[in-house]
Length: 119
Image 1 (cartoon, rainbow, N blue to C red):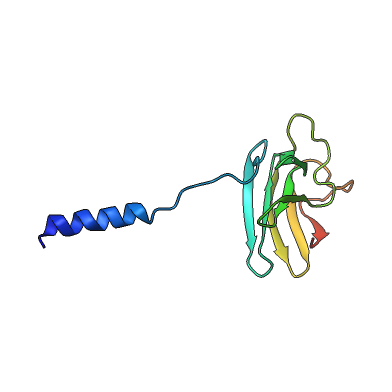
Image 2: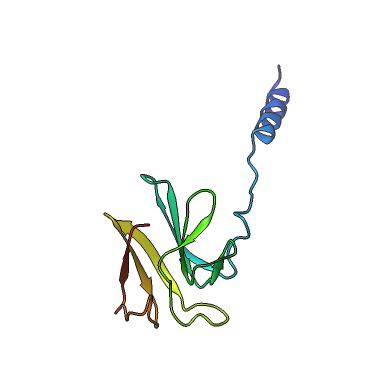
């Protein structure tokens, strides 16, 4: 077998095994700033300026369980056409931490960081 035949069959094999992208339900209605994957529980946490995730009102912070989106508490306050930005999200021990900017979250003033019990 010559070099070109080998390369041809290699490229065909790679094309056959290629993966394709798919959407997660209806996605979000605005930008996502951060994703955190909790590999122990199989949850994916999202933060950003979105109000909706998969037709669920989540207000800037959400959890994806592999099937559907869930809200984390009431999320960020003052979502009108889009939510104030939640810059990052992470889980530590049994609580989820986030950094909302400029507005309250769940009715409290976070002073740069807020937490909620793990869902």
